[in-house]
Amino acid sequence: MNLDRRLLKLVTAQPRPFIGSIISGSLGGAALVAQAWLLCTVVTILFLEQSDIAAIPLYLLLFGAVSLLRALVSWTAQIEANRGTLSIKKNLHSRLTAVMASLGPNYTASKQSGQLSTTILRGIEALDPYFSQYIPQLFLSLIIPLTILAAVIPSDPLSGLILLGTAPLIPLFMILIGKAAQNMTEKQWKTLSRMSGYFLDVLQGLTTLKLFGRSRDRIASIEQMSEAFRASTMKVLKIAFLSSLTLELVGTIGTAIIAVQIGLRLLAGALDFHTAFFVLLLTPDFYLPLRQLGTKFHAGMEGVSAANEIFPVLEHESESTHPDKQTSSPVDPFRPISFNDVCVRYPGRTENALGPVSFTIEPGTKTAIIGQSGAGKTTCTQLLLRFITPSSGNISIGEDNLQSIPASQWQRHIAWVSQQPWLFNTSLRENLLMARPDATREELNAAIASSGLTALIDALPEGLETIIGEQGSRMSGGEAQRLAIARAFIRNAPILVLDEPTSHTDPHLEESLQKSLKTLMKGRTTIVIAHRLNTIMDADRIIVLHNGTILQEGTHEELIGKEGYYRTATMTARETGI
Ligand SMILES: Nc1ncnc2c1ncn2[C@@H]1O[C@H](COP(=O)(O)OP(=O)(O)OP(=O)(O)O)[C@@H](O)[C@H]1O
Image (cartoon, rainbow, N blue to C red; front, side, top):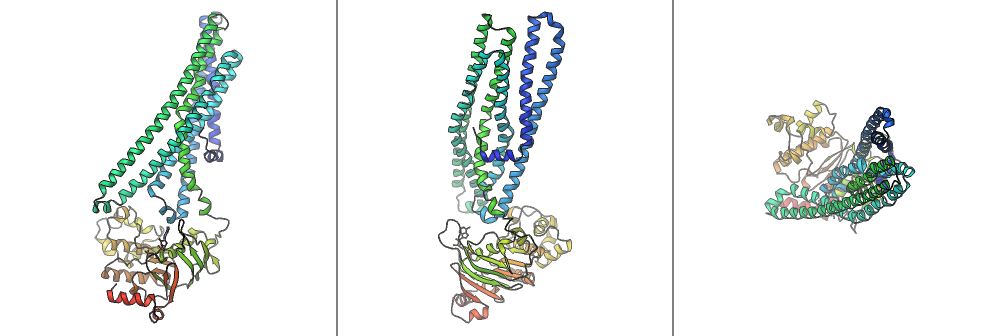
């Protein structure tokens, strides 16, 4: 019956609007019975008992009042259901975004972005008809037939028995059809998610696809996926139509049986006109809510399929925040940061990406981490940024375990400049202020000057208000790097993590960026992933990583004096000029 325990829990967490909706719907059921009774009475008086004709205006007045009440309660029922649904959607939306924000980029990177956005946006939207229509209808399809039965059985037990005997056929068919349809709805949902992910992937990689001449292949794959989606949607729709047809059939046959037996008994004089008309009027309304439930059955299935996508993401809620284990007292970031036997093993990997490693970063110093590709450098910075957690061992700041500090509180003390800074499709000003929205105009201007962006901004007709395009598409690589450095100046955090931002730039630009970075690093604890060895000679400590473990560590002078990776790499760099 598409009753998902996880979804029902959302209803019971804020039951008031739904209870309001169900009470209003039940009042509507009672009003329906009263309407039928009044109508029958008026018709009976008009045609058969004209001696009571004086009472007709009163009955008509009552009929009008009951009709008004019925309209009012159905409107209230819908409003209340919508209110409850909106609040559930809002709650789910913020829970999902909070989970993703707190699990960080490592979680979102492990999923297809299109798939995630389908889960968040379409998934939550799919729950709208589930809560606003399916759930209230489910209750109404129980309450209204019971109310009608309660009115019919005392007047005409035989008709009551027929109604009672045919009604369960509708939910029975619904369950049987629903079992077959659920798998198909889930398949349809998965195809849509996959298609969204694939489509976004193609859009983002369009330049690469064009250059490799592969865009047509991808378009063909999208067409294939769309076709698969069309086919699975048609299957679901076929089942939905089949279920509607079956339910209509049961309703129609039930109504016909009642009509025939009432007609025969009326002709034989075994039933009075008022009762016969009353039962006949109520019979279609007896089946109506059950038939309506059939038409909303698809909404119910979609809701359960959406829940199957949404709840696995929400399961991470408990991992993303540990309020009980975390202290929220202010953190002093200007203390030694120690990696103590830290190991990291990514899910699905058999080997550690890092560790065990132990080292200490003294406050106010510059630590460079170098090593071949895949050595574990980025993993170290991800740990520091609290995007991932050690599989074993721990990182401490002074006396405190880093894990005991809420991630958001810790991240406030860090500025991060990566090789490919993420720029948003908004103005330059907004992109800069993302680092610290309350930065003053003077701080903003100083950051722009220190990162060498003044000339660029002065040359733009709209200056800081210029929209820079998706992922900064209207900026050059060097300008994007400057913007990232300017953000770090604005952030003004005591800890600076640099995934060497100048490694892919030309020597002239590199020199200029290095100058800005030097100013930025002053007085801060800096951890830099270095790709060009000439930029780290002045580091207080150089850590050489190899296959996740520390191969060498020391200052440039210490390391250059010893045989090993650092000396060989430095010599090669000098020879090749890299
Ligand atoms: N999210 C992830 N899931 C699974 N494995 C990962 C993930 N991120 C990194 N790895 C693996 O962990 C190891 C270390 O990766 P890491 O990115 O830390 O290396 P790196 O030294 O920064 O490399 P590079 O210089 O090429 O950026 C690699 O073998 C990599 O394949």
